[in-house]
Image (cartoon, rainbow, N blue to C red):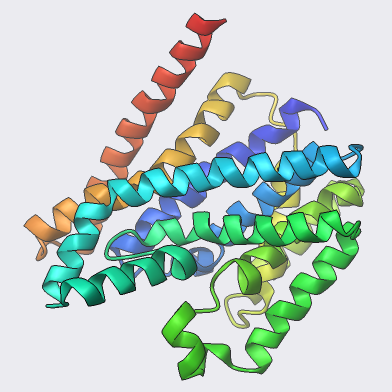
Length: 308
């Protein structure tokens, strides 16, 4: 896979980051894209993780997965601290005692991944838990197809047993939208795309399946999965030679910061001006997030060039 073919993925990631901003600032449906934005990030993460461990022996691959988990965990810890003032404010607004606030914070930090206005962080925690499961399965020499089968079984089990409606489960985990029951399925799906070279499927066929699943998911939500997977495969398989590679990579890097930081700006705006129209909030948050992310990535690029 050439770098040129990755440009499509970088650009779709930027689009999905903007969709996530819309999710958290409006009630727009955006033709169902609000349901597939975060799953797309999972699939992309899984693809690149399994590409890194391809051809490595068990110990080398375990080291790569461990480093990947630690990198995401560090980012999760930092972002949790950044959002901590909002978390404290949320507990204050709910009139919770100090002891109850601490217990709730620890529960959310370990098993949910979000507190007041820090909703994007659930993705990071889901990746960490998914990574831990993949690490265990890899240590047991599980093949990618078996990892996917286990992930699918967990996903189906959560739905069949109705865990989202189980009071005991909800008290501890709040939702099945987490690593074991959600993220793992999409991450291992991305791994299957790479390991079984599914990108060999004819590009025209991928585009057709992607379009048809997009239409069908407007009526049947189960087609969300098919659309996400084929969207990623389509994006990563189509060379975009008319775009400068640096711009595409830059866009992909910006998507991460837009995703992680936008609720800071949304929180400030919503707390100070909670009666403004949705579209104004979206435009303001999206614009500020894009500008801030641009300068962060630009600083990172400059730092890398200086180091080199």
